[in-house]
Amino acid sequence: MTGGNIEPGKGRLDFAFDALSAELSRWLEARINEEIAAARVIVVDFVGREMADAYPALIRVAAHLIPREIDPLRVIDIVGLDKQADGGTDVLSTAEMGSVAVTGTESRGKANKRIRIEVR
Picture (cartoon, rainbow, N blue to C red):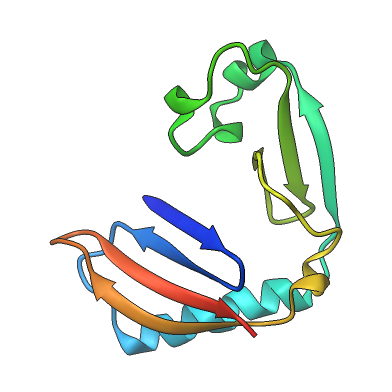
């Protein structure tokens, strides 16, 4: 994933793909909805900046944009799926999300494709 944006009820995901087919879009939608339906528990924790720096997987997108004085960092663990630093509002379980539909795809360059989603 190379970027993304989330707004109330919708969002976008950017990926480093050469091509994005309708078949792949349907597959992604199905996988996202499977993870939502799994009702994964979400755990919020706080990790000191020094420890977060020792585990780069905790800060995956634009780590340089997080001011150094933010310490500790809020970490969201979607148990069994993903764990990373996060500053957003979160649900207590993926089951609270409903379902997601892929509503569009577009090319943002040779190796950058965008997928648009909506929460249903």
